[in-house]
Image (cartoon, rainbow, N blue to C red):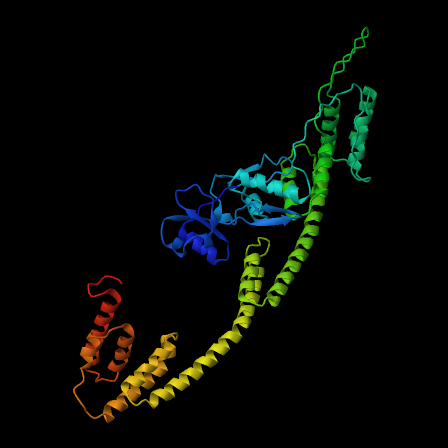
Length: 469
């Protein structure tokens, strides 16, 4: 199947929408691999290319790759050729030209997820249908048919009340010119037949008797008759057998596509097949709806039973890659997923918040009782794992206590100025403490002191020469 290459932006958007993405280095002939095999910077350069991971459906004991279909009518390119699966001849997909005349036909193919950009995808889709039905993809050898002269073909009649088929069977029993004339008169005089029915019946009669029989009285040698054209009844029988083997709506639609373009079917047989197809559509839509509802219930039960976030993520990956669910059904499952995730994380968040409040209360009390600026500033080291917002109440308490200590303090000696302490700070932790002290100084000098803070921080982080440590 074809692989569409994605750039980093497209791959990131696809991954954000829940689709699985594969990656490989640009210019290499290696197979695509999972993103876990690459560094986290794959989306920030032009050294990697991406593609969507193929999706698989499980049929019995087989995992079959789901062929990629066109997702919307807007994806079509005018006058381009697109492909649909051909159930009757899997290696020869149906070709459809994108034109205004084919718009309705193309829309229905897209809605049924049967339209492909490449013939390979359409062939893979047809093969998946046959495998899903339990059929065989092995090549069947053609059997040479020996035609015997004056043999009466086997007649396939539709339902017992199929009046047209009954007359058709009489045509195949005619042998002499008198029989032909008799059935011709019967067709012309039958009030139950319209002109189109009569025309179809006379075509069948002409095709049936279009053979040459040459008899040599001396040798009684029979010349082989010409091959007969396939009759509408035979074609109808073949389609009925194929329809009876279908198990999904898409399979029915693929056969309906073939029936629509088959010129060997007369109007009566065509209408009979269409009636059968409509009944199958109703049947399979109901079956598919029941299966999807059961699948959704199963996913919800798995989500409810999940005990960890890792289990939930695995379940979400499974239902996000399911192509049979609608957008509304995906949204419903995502709502259940998010609610369960909050439920799992809530006890952890509640415990973390309780611990934070206890530590904050203790540190604020210790800050209010600190006997020196160093003791008050030292409390910051207990908040290294906190966010700036979590640390703010403690910083305010320390600043308030530093202001009180500066008012009460008596000059004992001449300590180094705060500017000198900032310029000589040995590490970032000391600098953080001094930065807190800046907040207790007069507002007019705070901007100048913060300038020294930024300069010293740059030196400590990058070295005196500006080189990163």
